[in-house]
Image (cartoon, rainbow, N blue to C red; front, top):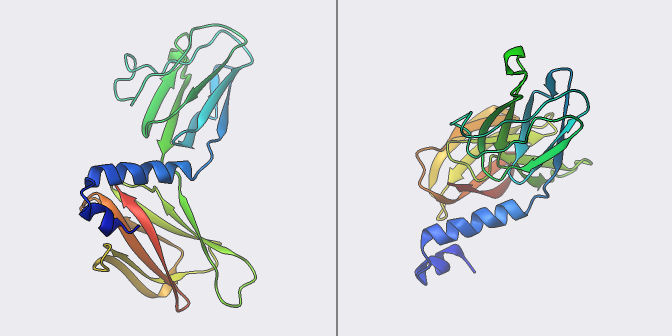
Length: 215
């Protein structure tokens, strides 16, 4: 059923958008990331994960803890952490996008801190070119997005010449046009209203249309 017909039947746009957000998130499998805790450090100290991913901290040496509480870091979207001890494993599932700071309380003065960046995962679309042996892919991220939308063509040896961002009736809202081509482009979509949008990408005179969600 087309989005236009759904809206005409009276389903609020916010419910439709929420459904699209859920559908987008369920397309991706959650994965786990490991942070080693030893030698007065978190390794890696900074980590970028997708919504729904699990971060596992393994303490293999010393008396440490993970403190990412909102009391300690008021700008964290949510709290996480454990108590000071040795030889522990602690995990947390990050379901809210944003930037998270955390620290080891006993060794904070020694610089034992870490950061977690939680983002929506990239949406990957296949882009088959005539005569090409390898399967190329367009990555669009973050999707859903709020402020900026990045288009990344893999492998980077190929380049797109034109990009149009359109509403559902085909009205052009933003565009990129360069005969020399590019394999990477970033759009500021902050001014767009929340909803579903179309993106037309042209590579070597071959065009494809993809979708993304603006929160």
